[in-house]
Image 1 (cartoon, rainbow, N blue to C red):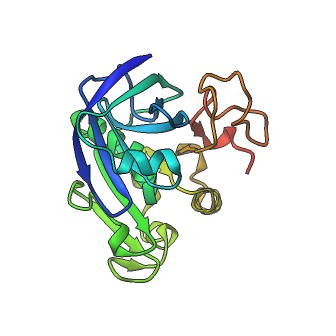
Image 2: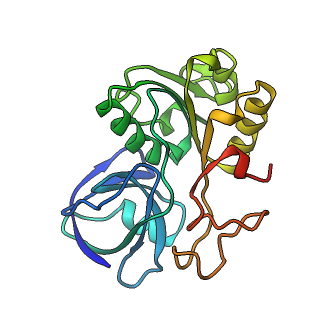
Amino acid sequence: MYYAKITRIERLTEDVSILYFNIKLPSYPGQFVMLSVLGYEEIPLSLSSPNSVTVKAVGETTRKLVNAEVGMRVGLRGAFGSTFTPSKSALIVAGGIGIAPLKYLYDFLQKCNAKVSVIFGERTAKNLFWVDEFDEITITTEDGTLGIKGTVIDALRLKNLDEFEKIYVCGGEGMLKATYTFLKERDALDKAEFSLERFMRCGIGVCGSCVIENGLRVCADGPVFRASELPW
């Protein structure tokens, strides 16, 4: 367990904040931490850098974190879980807050001089953030307020998937399954890695709360899975 202090907060949207800590966790892109706040339940959060998490307010603990103040102390366990496999030519496909672990991956790949293209989808433009942080990005919004009107699948149809060594995907369950189906139809599943989210209690594979349909545990066997490991 690490005890960390929040040293900086960036409010990205009404419901999303980046929290920076005074420590850098030994970690790689794709891994997560179990974060605890006094008086609230411990929750899993993907790392968006070695010393930050990006949080969306969806429950009591996450609302507390999104509205945290500099100086607040938290407990951190981890980093846990599997990591993304590096590549020299990559396509990142993110839906909503799924961009958080993929931002860590993007920064890592940039340092390795990889060529990286990003697709980032949201329901509406006001929910988007980091759009200026990527050299090559395609935006989709379901209401058409920015970029392509539609979903990440509409942006994927415009890509030549043969150009990419790896395709990395993170987002909501529906978006993940739709992307899986699309990549299967394009015979590109062998190069895809998916980051899953599930409710977790322990983070180390003991409690079984995050088991998926084929018996794999998101916390210990994932959260990053090769497409061949998924039951879809």
